[in-house]
Every structure is written in structure tokens, then in C-alpha cells.
Image (cartoon, rainbow, N blue to C red; front, side, top):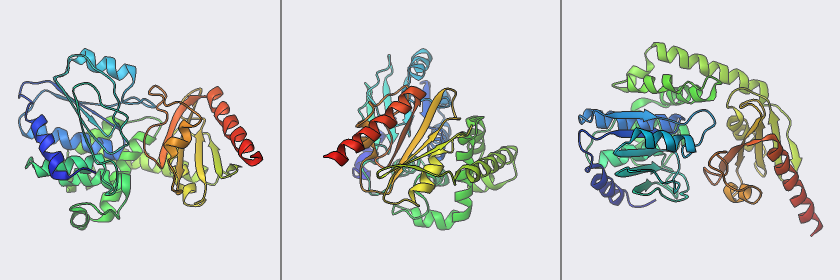
Length: 348
């Protein structure tokens, strides 16, 4: 990661160019890190009297750089566009004065008129929301610290070596932060893909205690959390199929639980690459997640067999956490390639 002071100066230079009447779009990912980062920035800007701001997000199973997103943004004609927690890719947009990307994934490039503020590569492990918090704090924009913390815990857990992290965890309590982070994640995991509720849940909070009140938003998110827990319990004991040091787990769930199942098995089969394939999340598609505890690049592993694809959200993410959404034929072709590759390696 670059020096935080240097990044904050770059951030201030670019954010200072925004005029009060400018149209601003915040395009954000839908997990706890993405939603909290988008809301954190939204709250800071609205408090500084910027009025013309919209938060948008990808649809279910959609990459933030899809053709639909590009067309939506171009038709909206923003002056400023923020990408939050969506990676960085050289996709070009029409007539946008400035694009600011705040992120922690491995960069693939930068859009035209784009400025990337990234915590990659780790260590330290700093999520997008926590990076946004640190940058805004550094330039005295008074961000809500709990919004940065929610995303950090959602992505990296409770044992992180990042600035101010220990004191913030002590301030807000591990149990409470973990609960809120899991509630936001549950909204994007259920088949309803209810990101509006998770956004309203955070936007309507003035302090962290507001998120612990028994509101209509919290009730709905608690229900989603129970749905996901029940579904994970149903599928987590599915026996893997093995191709050498690769364990493949196939499930059929309407919910986005394949990353959780892959994560569970990663900690069971520590010397394996885990692939969890979900045949029920999107119609006629296989949604899959790859995880490992091995010291290897899963991005390189997957790209050995499949070319990265924006429309399939395929082959991006992290070195030890990636995946994609492909049609059935392409999935079975992937498995065949992996099998043949291992046969060739055994014969060599």
C-alpha cells in the first residue's frame, strides 16, 4: 500500500474539484464493505452540502463494469463518478469530468479521467470502506468511523493490524460490529437481493447505536440472516469431489452461499484449492467461488483455464478469493480442462 498521507493528498486534490451543483454518482459494491463505503462517502458529501448525489449498484450477478452499468452512467451524465469496492478496470465513459476509484482489489487498469486510491497490495489488510474512512479522516472531512469499521470487519475479520482499528473495535464491541456486518451481507446473499434495505439501514443511522435499534430495516435483515444460516447449514456438509489437490463442491441453492461454503471447506482442507459451484443461484448459470489457504494466486490459477470476463464477473477479485458466473457448458468444459491438466501433470 502507498503512503496514506500521499494518498490523502491525491484524494483531497481531486475531491476539491467538485462543485456544489455537480451531479455525483457513487457506484458501489453490494457486500458490507461496498455498502458501508458508499454510505460513508454519501454522508460526508451530503453533510458538506452536496445535494445532487445518487448511490447505484450492480444487479444480482452483475459486474460493476458491465455494459448495462456503463450505459446507465453515460445516460445519467454525472460530473463526478466514484467507484467503491468494485475493482479497477480500463472501461471508458462519456464526458465525465472525473472518476475516483477507492478500492483494495488487484487493479486491472483505470478508466479514462480516473484516479485510483488503493490499499493494494497488502499488508496491511485495509478494505475499501476503511480506506475511505482513513482518507477522509486524514483530510479532516469527519467521516463516520463505524461505517469504515463495518466493512473492514466484513472483509477481514476482527484481528486486523490497521490504524485506529483496535480502539474502534473496543469502542463499538466485536459482537455488535460483527452482527451489523453480517446483516448487511445477508441482504445481498438472499435470493431477493435486497440492497435497498441495507442501504437505508445505514443511511438512516446517525451513530452506531442506531443500527442496534429494532427498526423495520433491522427486522428484515435479521430475517435474511436466519435464511442464510439455515441454507448454509443445509449445504455445508456436501461432500467434495477431488481432482488431485482441487476439491469441488456442488450445491443447488437460490441464495448466494457458495462463497461461504468455499470458505468453510478452505479451513477444513487447508492444502487444497476449494471450488464451490452453485447451480441454483442464477437460471441456467453456474455461480462459483474459489478459495484456498495455499500460498498461490487463485487469479492465475483460474486464468490458466478461462479468460477473464466482465460480463461473467469472471476471474477478478483477490489472489486467494475469486470466482465467476458462467453457463453450464462452460462450467463442464472448465472441469474437463482441470482434469486433463492434472492427467498431463501426472504423466510428465
